[in-house]
Structure formats: structure tokens, C-alpha cells
Length: 132
Image (cartoon, helix red, strand yellow):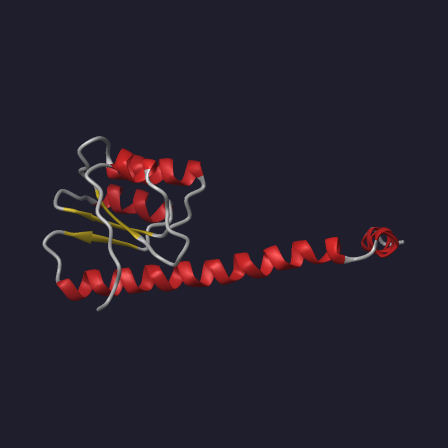
């Protein structure tokens, strides 16, 4: 499929690495060598890592899948799963990240625009947005 991939031996290895600035996703197993995959997902949220997560497990149950989905997982795949199911989940996650990045870029541009105004026009903009 031509997707660039990276692998990490443990959750801490991922956290110590530089996150590429391009659309992507994480595929996380519930059973990681150094922590629970659901705890890792929660830690990512606390750190502000916004990459979509596809969760997989050979030992999942309904409460696990609910927890993963409530914390934003794109999919929860029980093992064994079909290759196509994983591919579909990854492509959906990458598209979700691509859309988030586009929205974030638009918001960033909007926030920067008032700074490009001359000082007097910035004062007028503040008054205008305050309803005066």
C-alpha cells in the first residue's frame, strides 16, 4: 500500500522518539511490554499527542473496547483479524488525522491574522470584537 511505517519495542520507546509531522496513526496492542495499551492511550492524550489510535488485542472484552473507543480509538480489533480489517482501520485513522491537521492549520492561520494588522487596526479589531 506504500504506507511508511515505524515500529517501537515499547511504549516508552515511542514517547522518547520524535513524532513525524505528517498524517499518521498508531497501532497499539493492549499488551505492551512496559504498560497496558489502554494506559498508554490515556498517557498520549495527557501529553497532547493527537495521533489516532487503532487498538488490537488477543484478550479483549467489551469493557476494554468501550474504554478504548471513549478515549478516541478509531477501531478496536480482536485477534485474529483480517488484513483488510486492519488496513481499513489504518486508512480511516490516517484520513481522520489528515482532516484534523487541515482544521488545525486553518485555526492557526486565523489566530495569526490579527497580528498582521497595523497597531491601530489591531486596537479597532479588539473594540469591534468586544461589541463597541
